[in-house]
Length: 310
Length: 260
Image (cartoon, rainbow over all chains, first blue to last red):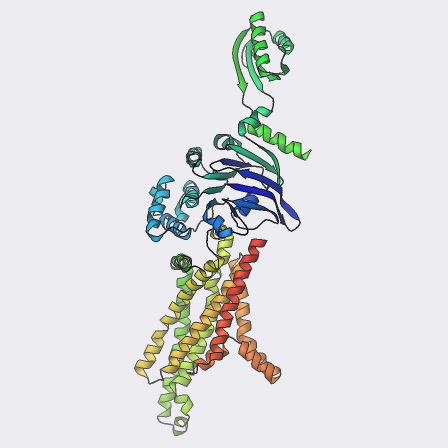
């Protein structure tokens, strides 16, 4: 659905996007992850035909973003980062305007605007001026205008910024529902968002692709860690633990009362787990807690980004 | 170009004008200023006419007693200059505001051509200026009711005013496309409009041919003959070229924004 080949964008001397290539399949949700200034917005602006790339090409829904810009623009819905809206318009007037300008026939305009207002939970504020509604509603109006006329491709630049947790959840659910019917690219620097929403992640930093993978795979790539809480003699447990095969290292972790906490880095997950179990049974330690620690995308992200810099 | 899209942009811009405070202020100031000059011109005219009744020498000066010459022509000239003062205040927001608030990013990624955007915005502002000019028709109605002016020069004078206003909007739209600061846009508009107004002042200083050329360039010279009742194709062509040139430059300016 989206093909990007050797995309480069320079602002004068500054290279914002450096030779990026990727593809997005139909119905996929692709996460665009990177620190501020990594080039996420620049890529999105090229894909939405706001400006052309310096080099390379971008193809959306079979049309070249530069040569066939109108055909691309007919098939995308775009939510820019700061959610720029016409403050002096009422919500329903604005959505009707967007529906019409995106080519909905005059008879359909009202119905289409009403539908997105319904989908995005905007019915309560439909008669309010955009300048008068809260940030959460603004964001939803932004998403609603991207969704109106059911575009094939949705490009959302940080769709959940500035929302409260409840609203974030609602917006995420909304985006999740879009998968399948729409192809979605969303950028964010909130990592859990990516693991919740996206089938695939592209991590970019300083205009270059650092990693492309499924969020789960990115997580399993780095070593598994396990948290153990065990009652008993600290030194003895630590000694015994370090002898278990399949374990890379042991760290002490704060724990309360008689319980001792350890973080174990596993080399081979299965072997390590069995080893620990056998060790505890042999020594008759009292096991309080044992669980794998989720590797957060933050860790991977920082690792990848700093690795790149080193 | 797509008429429907132009209409949609035009409609949105008009709503935006109607809901903004600036437009009402501009219209009120415009009417106050033109009304003041209208009052002065007619008051002077009636005093002179009154005095001519008892002063045979004065009565021989037909020019002074011709309402077309002493009221209507100067009135159109003045309205024209006040229009030049007012239009930058109407045009400054057209594109500069969209750039400031970032709405241009959505506008230019909607499936419409840049031409539609430019024409829609241009026509919206033209509607406001036409309304302003239309409101001054009250002055002419008063003159026709209480005096006996020739009507044709009034009609052609209005044609001149409309063309002058349309030209000023075109230039203003262009300066609005240059910057995201409305004040900067208005300042450049003022400077350029005054340049086109005053350029004929240097006509006497240069050779005759060059002088004629400079007068021809002047935006106000052309309304002068129209308020006398003369419609010269030269004048119409001047205004049309002026409008098309700056609309074209606006389009180019939008296009280069995409390249930066």
